[in-house]
Amino acid sequence: MPESDGLFASLKRLLGTLLAIVSTRLELLANEWAEERMRLVRMLMLALLAVFFVCMAVVLFSIFIVAMFWHDHPLLATSLLAMSFFVMSVVCALSLRRLLHQRPVLFSASLAELRNDRQELGASDE
Image 1: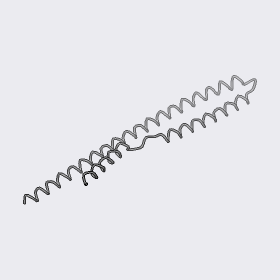
Image 2: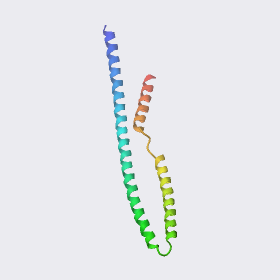
Image 3: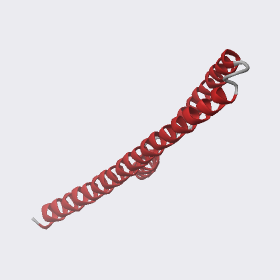
Image 4: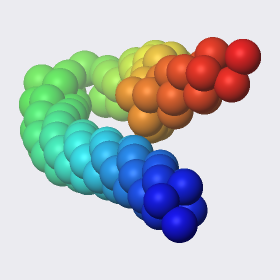
């Protein structure tokens, strides 16, 4: 019977170790998910605030420019403002596209740890 107790104790320790590894990896995934969610919410809030303030500045500046040229060339002032807004929107869209392609890989730390675990388990099997 001592042999079977040793086998069951060994299996019990192995199961405990596997559960600890899984638990640690799940905690790491949850932390990374929370960090990514907070980063995205913060980015969204800052983007909305930036858009609001830029819109206010653009409207007020446009009114100023059109009022300044109202008697001389109001259509020229309006068309130049419209073209400059279009160019700025294209530049912003291209910048946003570049930022979206530079985002960090989600769960990169968890994936690296799981890769290390797999290598360690593969090395111990040999």
